[in-house]
Length: 396
Ligand code: ADP
View 1 (cartoon, helix red, strand yellow):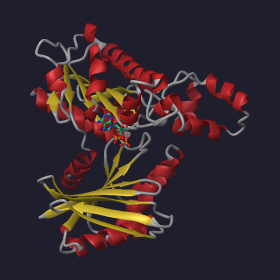
View 2: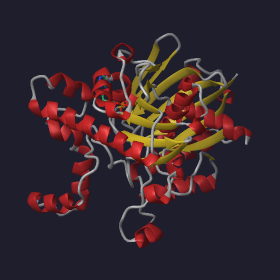
View 3: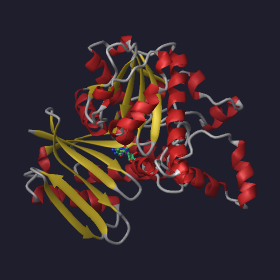
View 4: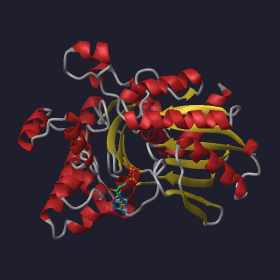
């Protein structure tokens, strides 16, 4: 049986899922955290609820990959490295180069590194992860799967900012979007559940996690998405502001005596959103719990719902219609209340939530039979999409 491993490398972490393919069965999954710091944490869950966890210093991603593979053998999850025939690496920024997932070679790794100016922390770590696998398992199929690829079908009118065109021409300053693998997975799954070819459908996918983005998927193609040049744009998120008037940046820098623009951008990325508004937490569960008694938490939640509704409205206009709206990711999949609030406020568009059907955290149609627009809850699965890409590109 052949196994494939999906890798998601962050600046100080490495997440993985090991699949039996083509069955798409998860054999093991785990996480290395605090890479490069003291007391790194390495955990694997496998089998029937079995868990391995160790705390030790893991100085870099190469060592993390080595330890991970050795431990898979030590725990008898695989008999030898030969069982792993494919690896898929999630990459945050693919720029305009990668319109689809790509087989990894030295040129691709170099290109991923060169794109680091669009996602400094991520792309560098991802390139290191690719090199490490190539070094240890040189002969397996290795693919890079980009968060941005799905959005490369956006037309110019969607991806260009209304600033002097030469900034796009010279510096590639434009909207790239993110979460593409998730939007791709849930939009295709929605078409399957609706029993219709995706080419005939207009779908709005709402990936609402700690990071959140909304995408208009027309005929299977992303035609617009709420994140921008970076993931900072769009709806209100856990710690990111989402869309703001750019003039606010200069105004606040003056008021706060901030001279380094990076410090200001950091505030917008890490101290804003639900956290900044509530002063309590970036986590929607905390906001929800506090909202009954805390006005700031209540308003933070209202703002979150409002921004998602506005993007849904925009994308109905962009596509001149909508057949299905999909909720996914931490908040989208789990918060019955947020889904209800969002859909109950946009009934004019032909949406109608069925409260009983909505009482779920699993894959389901949650709109009523009378609704013109089908609303679905679809847990995302970026890892399986990566594993499928390994199979697809292996055959190409
Ligand atoms: P990330 O972007 O880090 O992958 P996730 O997709 O895991 O994030 O989503 C995390 C968010 O999901 C948090 O805001 C968390 O509060 C929220 N979430 C998880 N479970 C629930 C729940 N039952 N109700 C409301 N929000 C939830």
